Length: 292
Length: 326
Image (cartoon, rainbow over all chains, first blue to last red; front, side, top):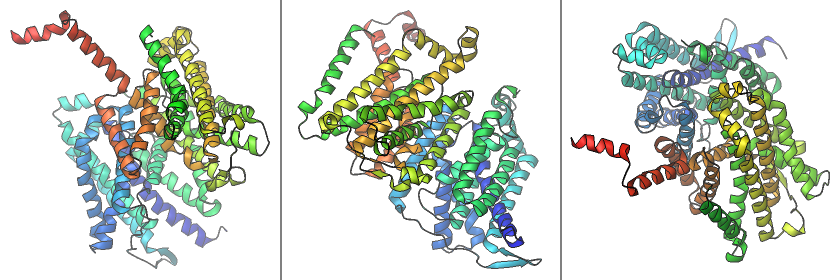
């Protein structure tokens, strides 16, 4: 059971799952950390990303490397309408946002059912077969997922730490009023943060839909993942989301390979509940009271 | 509660009880039964919400009640009221065990944990197929005795249970106990300083509420003669929350109005199942954006506004107008 081939399979699957999970969770944690909005409609945006890729790559035949970011950017731009109509009312209103965005999730998912019906579709794979790296056989499509995610995550990191707009975003997350007195246009900052968050979510959804399957209800799983990862890492903490995504991705890949998918769900939920009770602010978060 | 409201309430109860005589074709009775059943879930969740916690595991607890009531009846052969009682005690016991842990959590963390707890319970119903029948569920749950096998008979049973549940919750929310619960929600630290055992109060409300919703689970299984995990998903939990939100979370009338509305609306939109969900979603967004206090709060505000108008307005409501004119 524990031979080298299986271990490699677990590692590569774990890495590609982690990549997707980190993307999903970063979007979620960004919306929470900056706007104080608990985005229960997160899965729906991931689902839309899947459909966008289905059209751009599967139907229109845009080259894959362009189709993936294009699909995500398209969803993010369309989502700006949702930002103006829905999200804007609920910034800094955590409880109301949960209920209202659950409503948005319901509306988006069932609109998708009306447009595309409930049947599962599949996005044609961009790459098939294996590639040999140093005597190891690795599946190409999984490697592609990892590459795309790494590129996006690195550019996100550069944006947050090396640009003025990223600095403004971090300032807004720390203290809204003081950021405003320093001349930061917070509504523009909010909109940029929203765009980035939905972009990453839609991207993750597109990659996820290509690996598994595409249906209006596929968003449930990414939503649960976002919850689990963000709670693991600490709500609103960006390094926490990265750490949590990696932990969850590898654990799930390991448990699902050796013990089955339902065991892995039970274990991950159980661990998170236990962690929440002992340390509700997560591994890298800060307790509510301690925030200065 | 004023005298007028009491009389109105009594009239409504009498009217509800007389429904099977008024409505001959039985459709109204069917809807009435579902409303009565949903009121159990909505009002019991209301009790938890009033302590300051929104639980998204309520349908999971309802499922435990449903399966325990079904299995004790069908496998162990327990008679009718006893199996329903078991269906109430089982979720209450579970929440007595985990409640003290969960209820230490604040606001959003509690919501997230209960959301996941609900998922775990649903997975358990789905995976433990030797007991629960897995995704296929259990068919042929018998009617609870000859007295309640007719449609009208079961309607009265559901209505009676629902009224009993509302009465229990109302008793908890009024008088000294009600003030204790309000203080726990509004200011936990202050309540603690006043010598209120905050955690015990919360756990008591949680245990009572999950026990009551277990009864809804058992009754629903009897009513549909069928039980499956699909009825106990997070969507159902959410729908209990929505009933409270739409009606209003600050008053017991809220979940009663909400449960009625949320049961009748799908019946009106029966031909358009997808559209119905979309409309639900939009209503939720609109309610949270415009009137987060729900229908009850909106009515109260409208009444205050009107009474100020009819009384010719007191000084402070006239003040802005006077100032503006100058």
